[in-house]
Each structure stands twice: as structure tokens, then as C-alpha cells.
Image (cartoon, rainbow, N blue to C red; front, top):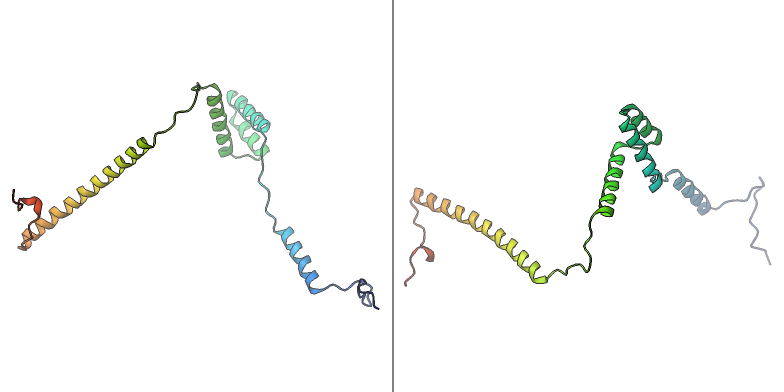
Length: 159
């Protein structure tokens, strides 16, 4: 019986690789080369420290130092703007007055009435457009001498 666990060794002394093993090694090497950089994540303490330093530099009226700080940390102005907005919103939420008790439950009838009101407004504007088109068609037919059939709302109904 032949032992199948041993690999055939060519004359050069290195084990022979199969085509599948070569493809797998190439795939792994290709994945390593194509890895995307990971997105930077900033801790809350880092954000606070940077904003504190920027506020101190702003108070000292030194815009060059502010720009140098941002370049040193590799941070854009838009990110600083977002962090300031988040800080202000958090302060507002922490200091703002909060209503106590249960939150009011929205009534489904109120929602339905509001939906129907919007639908009525939409249909009113659509009707106004249609009436304008009909008036233009009437005037055009009068100019061309074409007799339009009478509609019930023009007084052809019997009382």
C-alpha cells in the first residue's frame, strides 16, 4: 500500500504545487493589495480636545495656528463644523427643558383628516388647471367656428 499523505517532491527538492493552490495564493495576494483603507474613528475625548484647542486659538485670533492644527491632525474644516454642530445639539438637549410624563399618542383620525386635507388641496389645484384648459378650448372653438356640445352645468338641465 502506498502512503498518499506524502507529497511528490520533484528533483529540485521543493514540493510541487497544484494549480488550485497557485490560484488561491494569487487571490490572497491580490486581496491584500486591494484592501481599502479603514475609515478613521475619533473618540469623544479627541473631538473635545481639538474643539477646545480651536476655540482657544480662535479667542487668540490666530487663524494660521488653527489651520496648522487642522493640518497636523489631518482634519478638514467640514468635519470640525459637524463636530461643533453635534456639540451644540448635545448641549441644547442636555440643558433644554423636557416635558414630563407620557408622550401624547397621535390620533389616527387627525392623521387621516390631515391626509385628506392635502388630497383636497391637490385636487383643487388640478381642477383649476383643468378649468383653464377647458376655457382655452372653448375660446379656440369659438374662434374656429366649431360648435361645442353643451354640458349639464351650462343651464341645459331642466328644473
